[in-house]
Each structure stands twice: as C-alpha cells, then as structure tokens.
Length: 372
Image 1: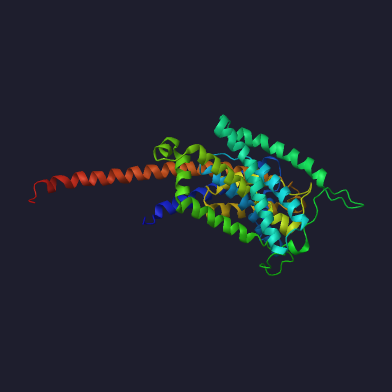
Image 2: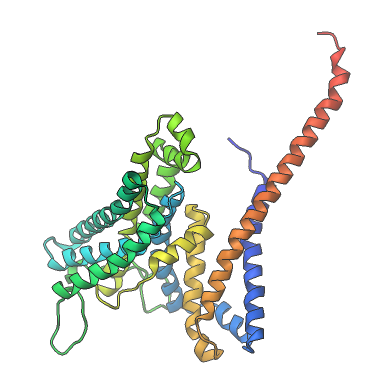
C-alpha cells in the first residue's frame, strides 16, 4: 500500500485554493473597473445560505454531479463527450413520455422510466461513437452537432405528444402519476422545500463510477486506452470496441441527469425544463479532475455560486451574470493551477531522486572493500 505523502496532499489542496484566490482577485478587478461595489457583491455571494437555499444548493449539486460523472467517463478515456446536453434532453423526454402513461405502479414506474432514459441516452450517444469508430469523425464535432439536432427533434416530438390544458399556453408532456412523484427528504431543519429523493441515485452512480473505473479490469482497460492506445492494443484491448462502450456508457449516464428534476420537481417535460446541464457538467468534471469526490465538491461549489447569485440584482445592484465570470475564471485558473502544481511535483520528485542517488554514490566507496 502506498504511504500517504504530506507533500502530495499539500500540493493537491494548493491547486484549488490557488485557483479560487486567482478567481477572487480577477473578478474583484473586473468589478472595480466597471465601478461595481466589490464588497457588497462578495458579501452577497459568500453569506451563509438560508435553509431553503441550502436545499436548493443540494438539489442543483445532485443534478450537476450526474452530468459531470457522465462527462468524466469519456474524459477518462480521452473522449470529449460534448453531447451530454443533447443526450440528457432526448433521454428525459423519452422517460417523461413513458412515465406519463402510468403503465406501471408507483416506484416501478420510476425505475422503468430511468431504464428508458439510459437506453435513450446511450442510443443517442452511439451515433457519435459509430461515426468515430467507423468513419473517423471527431466526437467533439459530432456531439456538438447532435446537441443541436437533439434540441430540434425533441421540440418537434414535444409538439406531437404535448398534453395541452384548456386555457394554458404551456407545451409539456402528460404529468406523471402522483404515485410516481417523489416527495424528497426533509433533511434541512427549517426548510420548506425538500432534498431530491434521487440524491441517492447520484451517490450510487458516484460509487459505481469509482468502483468500475478503479477496481475492475474494464476500468483499467478504459483508463489504459485513454492514456495510450498503442499500449492498450499491445495488451490485447480492442480499442474500437472500448470507444463504443465508453461513449455509450457516458450517454447512458447522461440519461440520468434529468431524473431528479423529472420525478422530484417538474413531473413532466416541457419548454421550461432546465437546459445547459451538459455544459455545466463539462466544467465541473474538469474542476473535479474526474475524481468522484473532487466532482462532488466542484458540484456543490457550482451550485452554491448559482443559488447565491440570485440576490445580486437586488442587494448589490449587479447582474447575476457576474457569477458566469467567476465560474469561468475559476475553471481556467484550476486548469492552470493543476498544471503548475503538476510541474512543481515533478520537479520535487526529480530533486528527491537526485538526492538519493547522490547519497548512494557517497556510500558506495566505503562498502566496496568490505569483506563478504
């Protein structure tokens, strides 16, 4: 078992801390340049959230976490699945249509709908996987294009199956039965809202991600293929099959992204269903370094900034979009900080090895003439 190195722990903590400090400094500078109240902005963002806001942060983080895990599966194999946004949109629409029929009772309807969502997300992702394996098309290009196609297809199908209510302009699928609506957990004292029941799903997905990628042969092959295709081929890994499997698995996980919203909040799919979750997942996976625990902290941070920004317009007179700047700067700063820390760690390791070799050379002459 590897011993825990205090230096490595310090360097790992230093990267996100450095990134946050850089983001704080750059954002403050931007606020000063445009004459906005710096102190009031940070006071509003960093104040302790109220119980209701705490629940909102947990719920948003749950959805972000699922999105980031879906992205991270591809990242671990050096696949850039930019199409999570389209995959989860197709998946949640399919799940909403299925669950709305109420063919199965209670929680069975929820489970079956999640299976439908995973199948739909995986099938949509398989298009990009096929294009990459059979035609050599970059998954970045194909998944971005498929996002736009998914938006159009789902909008068209939504008009076909919409459950229009008299006197309402809402365009949405049939509402799922009451028995399949998940009330949530009352975890935060004093909050009138509830934590999504499918927080349990996010925890389970995070555990399976850690276990499969870190403790199984499949996970080893996936990570090995991501690091070096030639080495993976030499060890007997069928790279095309692994690309297909990883991309479809990423799409299937993307299918779960909208499930907490569908069963815990909206209860149908419509034009107001939350969008942009796939792109948030990309940023959060990068922030969390594709690590399930790191992604959890990054998801909470992302959700915290989103929820806390709602009061900026009222209390500080600043548009809440300033948080987009903060999030973007944090992302760039983290990428740069981790690279700087990696180089520093490599330099320290080289110096350590050099010191050990020098010590061995000094000790060698004294032991050469010793009797056996």
